[in-house]
Length: 71
Image 1 (tube, helix red, strand yellow):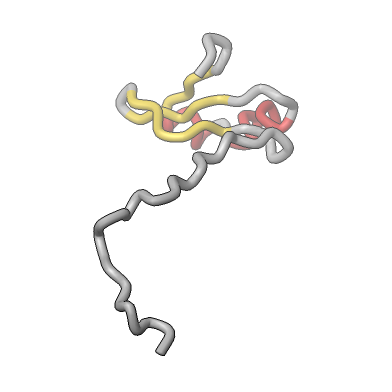
Image 2 (cartoon, rainbow, N blue to C red):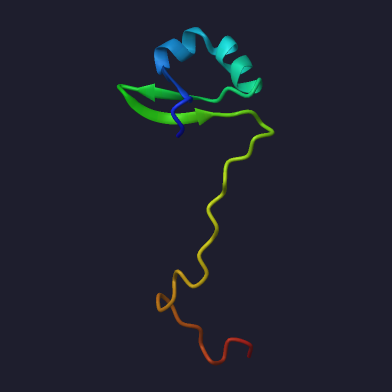
């Protein structure tokens, strides 16, 4: 999160949702927090969030495949 991202309490977000969504759609993302803990970040649809890549081999050694698998 950068310093310019607004943090909004969840009760304030409920009361001002239309205004906040419009601001986010105009390129001003914001965070919704509950009890001081950030829960979600609202961003415009055309601004993607980086997706974590899948880890290859993360289950290595957790299971085995029979030698007769193709039989």
